[in-house]
Image (cartoon, rainbow over all chains, first blue to last red; front, side, top):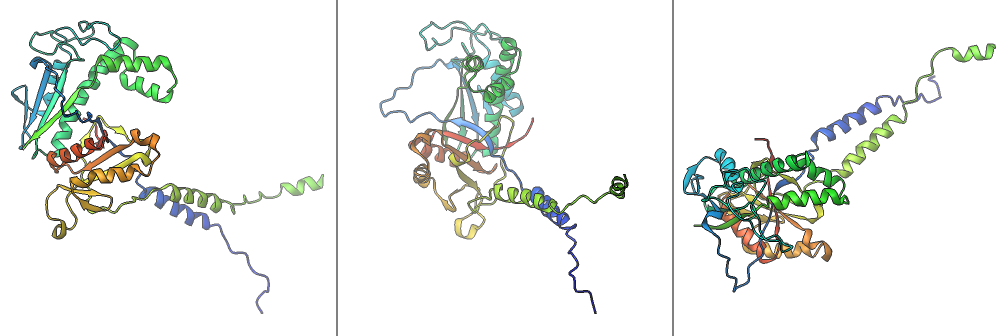
Length: 207
Length: 154
């Protein structure tokens, strides 16, 4: 006769099975963090809105045609050269800027390192980048262009931030994100942001 | 003395019976926190453009997503990379405002200004479609947009 008492089931390999499952889930789970190029649209203008007159030299026109070719300030250009061209334009500082919100009169850009040419932008807060694309332009190219323009702004902001506060703007923003209540950091971030405001406008596409 | 000596004989095995419990707990944690995609894709998984200046989208509940790309079923929806998917069906740009208003009704009023529209469009779609969506979004004052892109350093 066999023994009556039940032998205990060996549960030692249970952990192995559970680990296997765990690792399977860990590997197959793609934590897709949504990220993207963020953009703020302008509000719908009222019907009787008259657009302000802007000097030709303060607008940096980027045209993208349906064959995904760029025409920047009436010259053909590759996407890789766009960033430098945009930096040169924004950072030119050839004149007097807009009056600030607290009523102080506009001043010349004292932090710009551009050529201060008469024919390019007056001040970073007056420099407008206008992107005009065709309806048939590929979305990938459009994003590439937007990205290059944003990179131009990032470079300029980083440069100024390093000069003024000894750290890049990315680090400054990161520090501010970690500590939202810090007024000193907030002021620094705002300061850099107003020094180089991102003014990228999307013109209605041509068909 | 002899009592103490007796105890030193042989190491007792560590009891690992609780190990599976711990691992199962981890397993359940991951299974619960993993969010599955709530909408079925009617379009083929869009090949997102690459960009270096990307920002992470925060507050998942305040994000509504619009997909643009090629339909999985060209016999029904037609060919081309410019199909717009709202919720789980192919729609046209005219239906975007209704979609946004519907999404707004699900969040509290105070949070509406923080809502972001994420546009997940395929690299090969056309800017015209994106512009149509953008104009419709502007009509309903959904001004925060994120063009979904994968992070790449260049």
